[in-house]
Image (cartoon, rainbow, N blue to C red):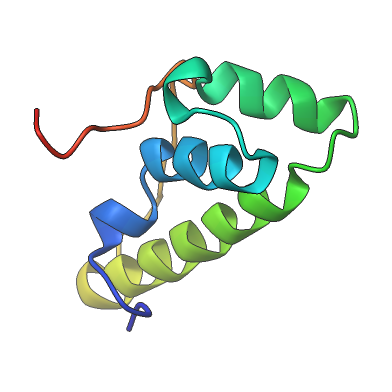
Length: 88
């Protein structure tokens, strides 16, 4: 069970960008995933947003594994994602 919303919404890279923009009080359009991870590496206080996303991804992946029992789980990412706009 995931808290609140759908897995694809809570675990999406665009949500990480949106939460980071909220934490930093900056326009969401001005940042992307690369900004989040590069600034987190520099110790700019973005670990909280990443930790929340990792927790959601962990719960979602665990739920999927309980249902389909795969032999292996492979993850990959392209972290230059932008925040999804509701009107697109």
